Image (cartoon, rainbow, N blue to C red; front, side):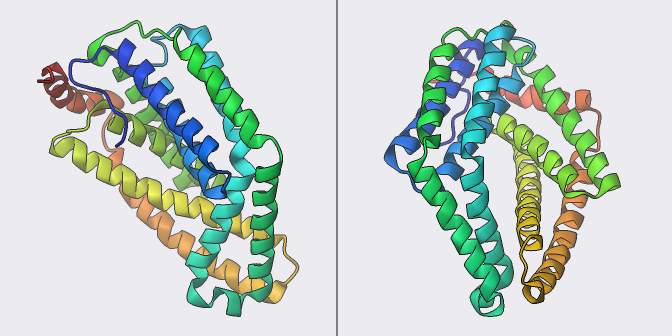
Length: 293
């Protein structure tokens, strides 16, 4: 079950508790398996942790928060290569369909080899060991993290910032049309999505509709990013007879994904950040004020 705030729970206590839960999940995965799929799950926990810390940014003891964020960035970098190899191969299989191996034999072989090499590296070098140590140290630092505000005031500025950053990233993506700008937009969308999920497990219609749109947007932007990684990999491959048709296929799919993303973005970012958080404050405050029986 996703970690979230509890009714009548103070932000100071809630943030430490939820962060500890995500760190525990990451450590459990790292101890249980060295399979590449583990990397994907652990990196998701890192992203959730970073989103939580950003939610209360400005209301914590800054030194502790900064060290926590630096630790999480280091852990993410330890696991990045293995994750990318796996998602590139999965993006290729999804895009090319059941005839991927038949239609793109050389690319298929090269992608399989890349996956094996990165999986072997992950199993045999110390990436997982280093990531484990970073998480353990972060767990100890959490004991010193303090949130100075209470109630909605602890979260509203962070929510506004995430919304504002996503809005600006959407404008840049629409104007620049580059893979990097769409990827940057995705990061802000995921941050806001995690934050909204964290705040309340029982949102009324306004919150549920928002979560649905954010989830659909994050999915479209995530697939676009995976295809951009696949395109970069294919472009460095010397089998031009296979690369050119695959890149055309990638570009066609990205065009569709980006059209969907921009449409969803225009629906999501249609109000000022202050209006956005004001809309969420009343239903959240009503829910949060009720004591758990």
